[in-house]
Length: 210
Image (tube, rainbow, N blue to C red; front, side):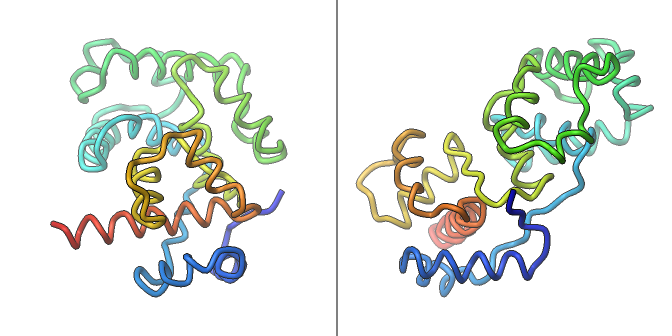
């Protein structure tokens, strides 16, 4: 299992990607070195990723800040005890509240061991996480990429990633998950770093238009 844990890992992968696909030479020249995008694994980070599902970054950040300020204890045991009204007050939707209840129950009942995920391969991690009702492929892939540092993760269902690939490849329309997965097939084994670059390129182009 290759990993992107350090800036040196990131730079080695960037060099490899630019050899595989010269379009990344132009991307790197435009956006520079992308951020490492590595955070600690575990419950709090998984909660953050779940909050970020299907909402803007600004909305997610605001909800996460409220949750971390108001929810005590910020643990699976605490999440089991919070009332529906307490969750709603943080700005959480009903589906996400159900996901947090399912996640906290799985962790407290030892049906899910987040520490053990470090020793599993990518598919095994995704399978373990998506067994939790409300956790889908995108959440599992972002956890693999950011929390476990896996090098070849490609969250094909990510909207910003799809638009970024459209921009980078000068496509007439936004590719869907299947199409963007096919485009990225040649970027193995560094697709997680390709994703970092594409996200940076998307943000840069969006700011230029803004």
